[in-house]
View 1 (cartoon, rainbow, N blue to C red):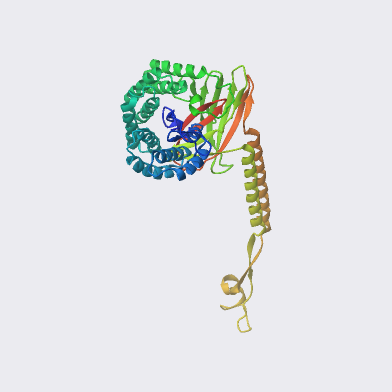
View 2 (view 1 turned 120 degrees about the horizontal axis):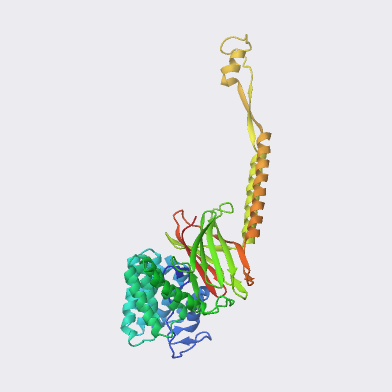
Length: 478
C-alpha cells in the first residue's frame, strides 16, 4: 500500500504496494486488470493520485460480486486511499467494515489483503496515538509475511514492515529492538534486488539515527554515509519532476546526528539545514499573525552547488501537524495571500470609517423647572437647586462626535497602509516554482494556511527539489 507523503515522517521507512499478479484477467472499462487486482487503481495509488483512485474504486465496487476476493481488494484499496488522503475518521469506519469482510474469506490469496490491511492499520493507529494498537497491527502483518517468506523469498514487503515496526519501537524509546529490526530488514534488502535502493538508503539512515541515540556515533556515521552515498548516486537532484512510483525518488531528511544535518537560528527561530552535497536547503517556521491567525511562513534558502540547473518546487510543498491530530496545511501562493491581506484590511478600514462616521457623543442640557408657575430661587424646586441636583431638570441629546470621527479616519488610513505594506512584502518575499542556476540561490518564504490548536506539535515540512524531497521535522510551531 502506498503511503501518502504526509506519513513519510511518522516512521523510519517507506511502505510499498504488493506486486501485481502476473496472470492477466478481464479488463475493466478498457483498462488492464491483473487477477483480482486492478492495475489502474494500483498505479493511481503508487503515484499518490488519490482522487483518481477513489473514483476508480467507486466504479469497480458497483460491479464487484458480494463477498468476493475482488470486493475485498477494492475495500482494502479504499482503506489505503482514505488513510493517505488524511481522512482518518472515514478510514476508521472503513477499517471496521473491512476487517469483518476479510474474516469471511477462505481463499488463500486473501492473506495478501490481510497483510495490506494490517500494515495500513498500523499507520492509522500510529497517527491516532494508539501505539500499542499500531505495534499489534504491524506485528500481525509481519507474522503473515514470515509464514510465506520461504515461499516468496523475493517479496520486499517484509523489509518494509520490519522498517515500520522499527520506527514504532524507536519512538517508544526501545532503541535496541528498533536497531535489531532494522538490521534484519537490511539483511533482507541486501539479498533482494527487487527492493528500491532508496528504500535501503532510508533503512540505513534510520539505523544511523537509532545508533546515534544509543551513543554509538561512529557506527551511526557509517550508516549515514552509506545512505547519503546511495541517494547521491542518482541524478534525482538534477532531474525535473514527473509523476512516477514514489519509491523511485530519494528523500533527504533532517536527522539529528547525520553529517548532512545542522542547525541554526533566524530571528530566534530554529533553522534546520540539510546539505546534500550538490544542494543545500535550509528551512524555518514563522507564524504570520499580521496576515491572518492561521498563516504560517516557511523561510526557505536553497543554494545550488552543482554544475547544472536544479528545479525548485516541481511539486507542491507540504506542511502538516501530527499532534494532537493530523492537520494538513493548504499552500497559498504569495500573490493570492497578498490579495487576501489587502481585501481584509480594506474591509477592516471601511468598518472603522463607518464607526467613526456614526460616532456620537452625549450632550447634556440643564434647564429650570418652575413649580406651579413660580420660582423664587429657593426651595427644593428652586432654579439654582434644580441645576445642581434635580435629575428631572436634565436633558441629553446625541450629537455627532467629530473628534472621534477624525481619530477613526486616521486609524483606518493606518490600517489600510499597513495592509498594503504587508501585502507588498508578501509579494516581494514569496517564492515559487523556478529553476536555480549553478551557483545561484533562492531566499524567501513559502506560505501556508494551517488551522491548529495551541498545543500543536510535531510539524513536518517537505520541500521538492528536482525529483527528490527535502524533509524537516520541527518539535512545534513557533
